Image (cartoon, rainbow, N blue to C red; front, side):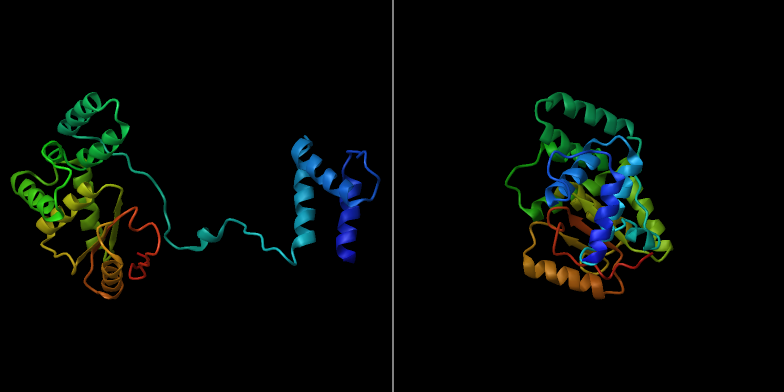
Length: 247
């Protein structure tokens, strides 16, 4: 208590604002703090007030310095901008014209075209009530007839997969829409000859809790896994991927 009173007296001696309330009251102290932080033009005064408040409350409050993530080795966050192929540029341009009044369609269909331009025909011929196995069959047919790396994102994904494999690392792939993820799964199977449930793991909104738990268990305990695919909504919470190495 004595320490707090000393800090309070120090604070009152620092500020120039004069309150209309009676001196040495609690209201005067709160009013001075508020006025200094909101209206004082002296930045150093604001810093001094914050430091004094922290000193007063350090026995009951923990202050996060914001640098804990710096202690994690190898944590890097950056963006990669890819140049679309001519076929992708054409497909995206056509999509924006057809669906110019439907931003969601531009976003959802565009996410597939950015992965591979061959998915444009798949989008035009798709039905709203298609089963997952029907979607998988059509993706397999598409992969048989086109170059899987023709799309800029598909090519980038394959290069990342090869890089991780050569370095002994693992790859996590998250996406908002299902079709691009399923295409990348099929592309991985075709390119690497891997199997879903062995080297490849996937969690989407179509999986129930038991299937999610089983996928996470295999992912965390399998020495053979190489790549994990997950939809953002399905993996937004309740997902523990401890099997991913730091590398």
